Length: 237
Length: 293
Image (cartoon, rainbow over all chains, first blue to last red; front, top):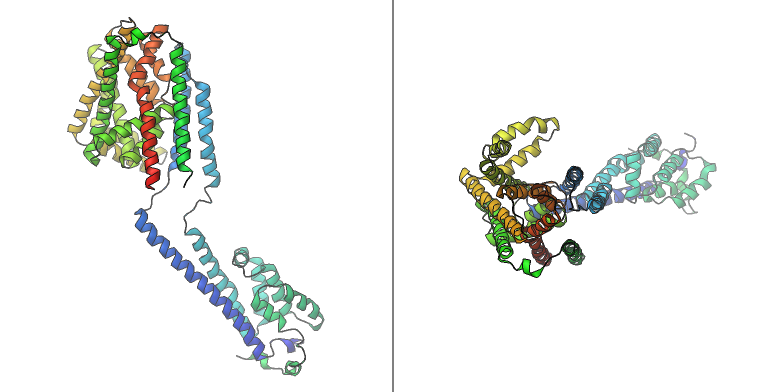
């Protein structure tokens, strides 16, 4: 390997990156725990307040009522045509009412996606946290531990090819998945002439473990210069 | 939810204003003299209309009380609110409000609703069949009687249809609501008896109103008028407001200007007046419920 003299040569640097990763893992585990507690509480509250789950049929009801109304109106018009009478039937008003009642129905149908149960948000966060843990931080930790650059490349690929994972990372505030993938690729394929690029990327990337990973590549300022020359330590088991 | 109270008030005021406006515009089209409104015929008609409304509530009470123990007063509040909403919007809305007021479940209240309508029609058809010796009325009455008393037969008749639209669960719920409301045979027979009294009271109120204006028809015509009016005003899904109801009456007793006045006044003393009372009752109940929440 040509340029691997800078890849986590220093145990302390590796420890630093691993520490950052562990911190993220702990944060996500806490997130999962919070979501689980929240869900349990919602369940308990719901069970106490509502008894068995009550389904909302109001939109079916409204739609059925409107249909019935419309059929009735047609029948009424037909009957009053066939039996002309001095009695005036406010057909215009009835038609207007049908239109007016269609508005809440349409509103409901358009917005019903958002009116889900209260636990949905927590459930979603829990699911995302699990995904990010399993598909990102755990492989990252393994790869860093063994300084396995092939695995880091695979992980970067996974980030780019797995939209659910990418969006979960983004929505949980773990950073920009594309930038993280780029940073991992940069790290895996590091050459000396990429130093500026690495510095710039380390500056931009918000994910702390990845930032630490990139920074470990940069020319250490003075005092630990000689540590770079120690080779062979990168395959520690 | 602070907006609920003013919204309810606004809606009640708007619907009541519409109601009063329609009553006023209808009344102004005919020449009403004070002497005719104070005649003994009309005053008796008003009284009969009141009795008819109590009988209507009693019909509901019979179907509701045996299963849920709801009081007569509560049932009256529910029927008043239901009359108001059925008048101004749609009887389906009326049923929804009754569900809340009676504290029963939806299918049960729906079942009671349908049963009350069916019982009223059944009573009217039976009277027409026996007084007028009308075969068609008898056949229709027989069909309704089967549906009310042998409800399992109706269930199996409807089964293929609901199977085809894959809504067997809905049929099951409808049947359970209907069956629970129906109760024992004793309940049904009592309800039919009250339904017959109700139909007689209604047609008598119509008869007396007609007599006030010198319209004298065969009593059978008034029975038919009540039936048609119930059908057009209550069963069609259009607001049971002014128009459809009177059309039903004039279909039976003729289409003269006087008949229209009679139809309007009859509906006023048996229904519209109670819709206005119902508006107030409804507001009180809803406002009370908002406060309780």
